[in-house]
Figure 1 (cartoon, rainbow, N blue to C red):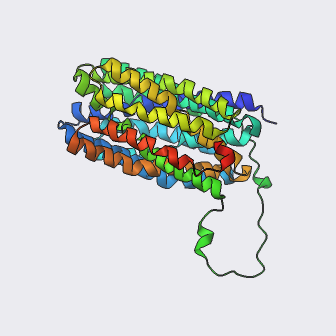
Figure 2: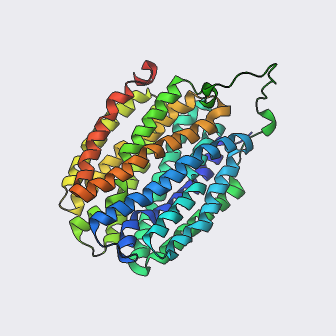
Figure 3: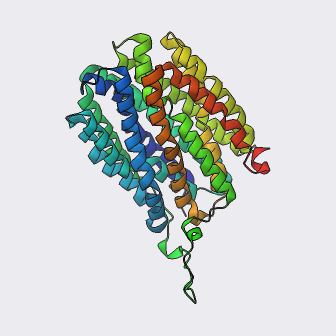
Length: 401
């Protein structure tokens, strides 16, 4: 029998390193486009940043359900190894692209094989007792923020002192270390012989489009819709933080200050995932999700109005504290509503749902910057976050009250 606490610790540690690898590079892509690839106009750069995120999200959205289904067939640990090791090999390619369109193409390729968060969530959800899943998934969510914290600070310092190419290799090294931890220490209770065997049908049934739609249950489908919307809202501003920092502070040391502000938000996310996940084990998730969503939406407004990095960073810290715990809240409901043998597939769909929502969001954000300026990204994002509150009302009453 797997020691779920020990397993959670090593999955959590691997996720910290994996997400630190991504965090050491991704937030600085707008600066890389300007300083290395020569995209100088802010409006044009906003569109290319949107294309960079859109390409990655599109390939991730397409591939994640496939990896989730393969996890249910071949095991979750194998998928976590695949995500870390293959991504580590591909990551440095971004340092050698001859132009911005090639950067977008490489990002598309990397995202096909990434998905460490979904693979880790599936593994933890399958090896943790049901009564502890809120705590476990909340703790795992804290790894996302802890890893981002390390990556943002490390990436900002590396870019500021050594340039962008060493930052790409730093990210690859962190992903490789994450894969080694999974290989040596993470266990999976997956048993291919325990999979339910469907009996042979007595006669061939006529084709029906209903068979193409997974039988998840109405609660899971409601949650998948919420994940689509949450993904749409959360990505309005994320890709463009470096541009806002440049607007407030100027281009000097923009990478360093972008890293500091993103790291501060990640600190808030660390505490948010643990605290809100713990509360989900003691109260109905709806009682946690609604006030967290309200405060998160309101705190987007001062980010757009900020005239100093202190105001911008402080508002972003509080915003991420309340918004960062929404994922474990919804994932807890989803895990409780899904049989163990389907959780890999369902968690794969949830990741694709968030990415599917963020596909349109990243494009909308770029168009808003191109036509109205960077500040309006925050204003519109705040209003859209507040609109999530009535949508939570579609969850079953026992989950809301």
